[in-house]
Length: 130
Image (cartoon, rainbow, N blue to C red; front, side, top):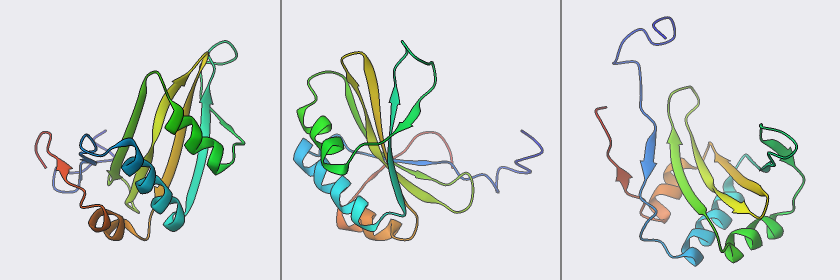
């Protein structure tokens, strides 16, 4: 680790954003907007009966959003600004348990980070020291 990070001044922690006060529909609005300005998005599947690793799968956008909208079991929505490596980017998406598999939606926004943050008035969750 010392070879990668030469000093604490060079290391930038990821920023997690508070999503607890957003309704499911607001979370969907955030994902829809993020997709419209993102550089990439995809869905991974974790099916432990076949593999212990996530695998990218083909799924159209509407189906990915429908899974989130209809989720009845464990489901986590996240917005994280990844700052450890360059370039920084926003990672927006979800993880949900669907019967015998977990689905992960990844939306990566590189060029419109501040736009997304201000549009939805995202607030940082402070953990530890900068």
